[in-house]
Length: 91
Image (cartoon, rainbow, N blue to C red; front, side):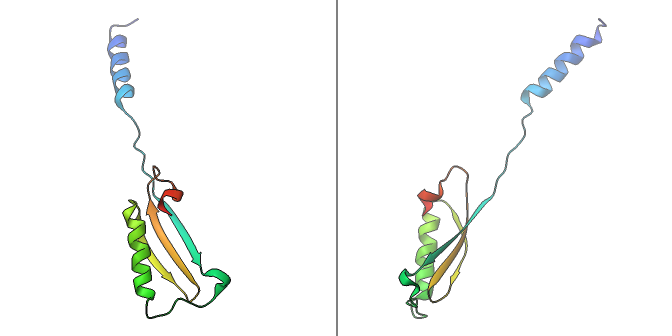
């Protein structure tokens, strides 16, 4: 065995021992809340307040609300969350 072989082996061993791949994940979820019996009860007078309350509730869990919008009988929410969070904890 040549003299350079043990040094090369030690360098390779040190490099592979401490090099770890980084992981990064972005998880998105879209939820739709529908009004019971699909009645048109979400009025323009309180729609913006409703969206703000839903957004704050999602943000308090550590998730990030991206957009909330809806119609007269449903509300759509798009938010980003971390893998350590369960959707059931956010909702």
